[in-house]
Length: 332
Image (cartoon, rainbow, N blue to C red; front, side):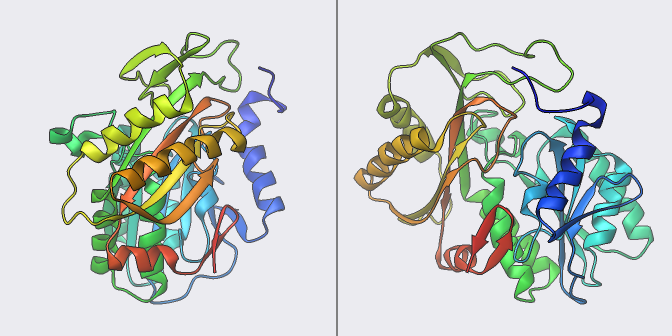
């Protein structure tokens, strides 16, 4: 697996430069040059939304900076959380005088560094609230949902919280909506082949050729089981069954669905998986009110996919449909 790069040590910084050159709506800011922010000056008295995470998952995290979504995003090294300094820079950049929601995945380093950054921001007079994405049902059982990792379902929280902030909601309301979205979102994924990190000579984990690692995390965290791959229909049945087995407060009959490529799996295969998943949802009495199919949260060039369901109500459905504009998600 040969990578298109110069020096491994420059991989993240050069990629961020290229991202912002290709998309002038984005700029790199901060003392460490590791925060992606909107180029257009932020509106005063609007709640800001800051996120952050390790590189290697584009478009997550920093690819969702834009109107109706994030205001700023701290970037760490590949598969490593952002530093305290970058996390603080993202909060300060996102601040428009009405407070900042810190919205990111439930990973130890990210939590620790954002917590310290929020404490420093508080000393500077910036009020923050934190909501963690916890949608990966493979990473902990239902009784320990607060320990789950945040993966592709975090996008639904970005979208709903971002729409609320853009509409002028206050910090408590934006945080409530983000948490509500997280609470109503579930994700399960699988890997078919590993990825290679820049500078490495071999993958950090293995998937037996011809097999599926069900429930593997986006950093190669162990899955629930590994066995020979049978068919898209077969894997979709287990994915949807597990997602629907989870309890959801105020469950409705409408779901937003994201069928996501982990990097190498192409659109053609994603559409086959979506076809299977949608039929299963309809057979279980669910209507899809919003659909996303594509590479929205990747793991370098890992082959495989995930399915995220957000069980919407009227409030969330309206927020998902609200206008948004970033390089990787546009809603008009």
